[in-house]
Amino acid sequence: MAEPQLLTRWTRAHTLNLSSVRAALWLSGTVFLALLVVYFVGLDQGATSVFGSDSHIHEFVHDARHLLGFPCH
Image 1 (cartoon, one colour):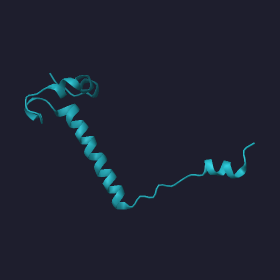
Image 2 (tube, one colour; image 1 turned 120 degrees about the horizontal axis):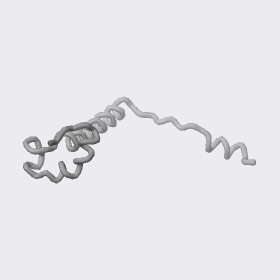
Image 3 (tube, one colour; image 1 turned 90 degrees about the horizontal axis):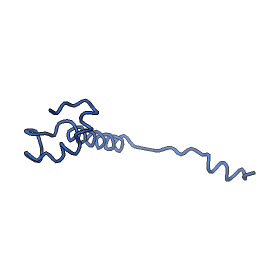
Image 4 (cartoon, one colour; image 1 turned 180 degrees about the vertical axis):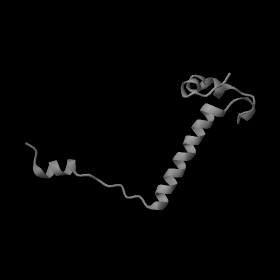
């Protein structure tokens, strides 16, 4: 049987203390990354491409575009 002190050490819940400013920074960073992923998967093609007429990103995420319901051709 485990010692009571060892058992409470492993079952104790730890709280994550975030200030509102730090939480807002995490949220805005997460939203930025999510919008960046949506852009590259769903919108990066042809005229709106960040990289000009290069279609490497479009071809790399082509199947994901169809899986998520984005039309591309």
